[in-house]
Amino acid sequence: MRERYGYKGELRAIGDVLHDHLYFMEQCGFDAFALREDQDAQEALSSAFDTFSDSYQATVLRPVPLFAAVSARAKHDRSA
Image 1 (cartoon, rainbow, N blue to C red):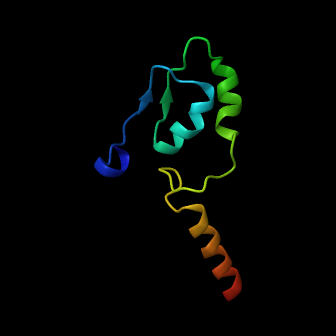
Image 2 (image 1 turned 30 degrees about the horizontal axis):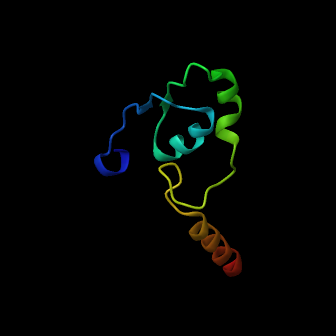
């Protein structure tokens, strides 16, 4: 919705949302989450978004895939 239609509003994930889904949902453009009742929201907020330092594929948050970013940095370093 964000890329295709330019939607800027809140995208809320509801339903069977678990702590380990949050990082990936954020990469897809979700910015609000209604966790399942058995999930601890404080624990999720303190660790879910730091699970991974980077991702290989392009995402809403990082439109340049990792391989392209690394290649561009290497090319820049060689020319400097």
